[in-house]
Image 1 (cartoon, one colour):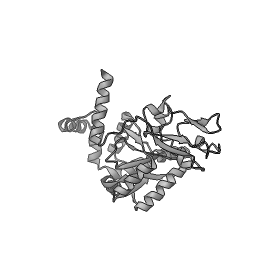
Image 2 (cartoon, helix red, strand yellow):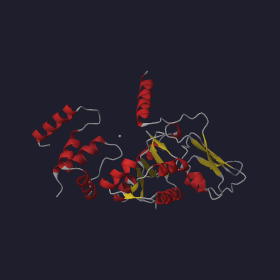
Image 3 (cartoon, rainbow, N blue to C red):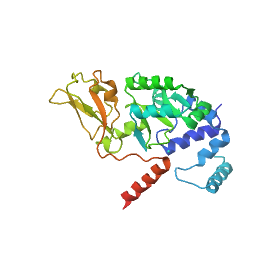
Image 4 (cartoon, one colour):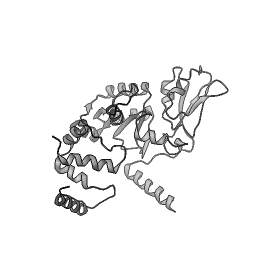
Length: 279
């Protein structure tokens, strides 16, 4: 029987909202019971979305006991290869978003499920606590090929260094991608810094790229070759990786700002941007 504290955890996560709000299904309770002791669950249940001191958290825990009551960016294949080469520990696990969709009875569009990568220390944690599976570098490269063939988007934290996880996302269920696609100009807020360039001499107008493009940024032009809406294209390279004629190359966008180097640099940049918006 599921302990009350874990049922409360679901209620708390649902109120907080966000992409990982939990679900009232047996699999959710089995997962949280494996990941959290009852005491750890109690601590989670009194945390707020704002920073808090240890004293504040302790006070909330005592009160509850008396009452008995996370920047993303898209990555190209060449970038991802560097992460595979860099880390000794590489781990893969099931995509949370598609697994949640499957539990809701929704179609996952025949997309592969076990495609979420963790690297280094994050990989060790996933192996120990999240049911991850260890991969060799060659196995990781093979899986990377599989995700590209399926038309999935490589996505991780928006830093140039310290990448320790990689999601391979679809357009239907990924919480980040689906929210971005609601925007009229997705590329302004979500971008790899690359854009597709079509070779009209190689293109045979098969329109494979148009069907694969997650943000629907491609359409056939007057020259019988696809043209790109750069306000919608976020540079995921799904068009290029699926072109049977190798008629599409990804090139760096001119003047595109490089991502922050580290997590610390990313936090600094986010604070600076937030301050600029308030001025």
